[in-house]
Image 1 (cartoon, rainbow, N blue to C red):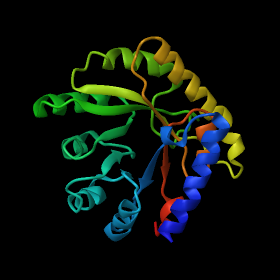
Image 2 (tube, helix red, strand yellow; image 1 turned 90 degrees about the horizontal axis):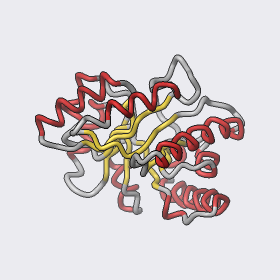
Image 3 (cartoon, one colour; image 1 turned 30 degrees about the horizontal axis):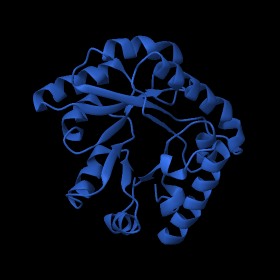
Image 4 (cartoon, rainbow, N blue to C red; image 1 turned 180 degrees about the horizontal axis):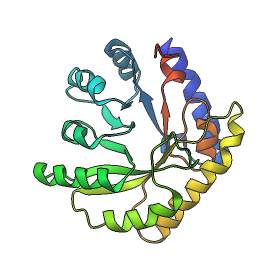
Length: 225
């Protein structure tokens, strides 16, 4: 099933990239492994998937230990400050820096480890109370403060669009985040990654500027929880 799903995803990624006029190699597929057992992750890895995303620290750590070398691990869920110490040594990129409190905690722990931590700043693009992230108005002031954090390497932005049965309705949300991403880049900050788009809406996200998409159900099938 994973092989067939991956082939379908690759075709959809290629079509979306072509619509935008970019090579599909510019898009990073992050396989979301929440509730996915290690043998399924191993199968995806053997099929050429290189990047994996986890939402929960306690679930992620034992899985990561089974892959001592190879995959790049992305932390994509809400990160509590008391879990920062566990996350920093094992994840390659944290997508979900959603508050200055969290950024300060990462800075403090990064200094202890003498490590520069790769992060994305999460923007609450739908202004939803159920989601974390900076409001659009908060992003630039937050980035100005975080620019002084020596242990943070800010590489871009992340956003989660509101869910709509018709993914076309997500287009304005993705377009606005891409505009902010470009404005920040023009201002001189490094903006390498724009992480947006999931199983329901990733093609629209790519068309609107995403270069990282986070896919779980599309690859591994429906989750148990």
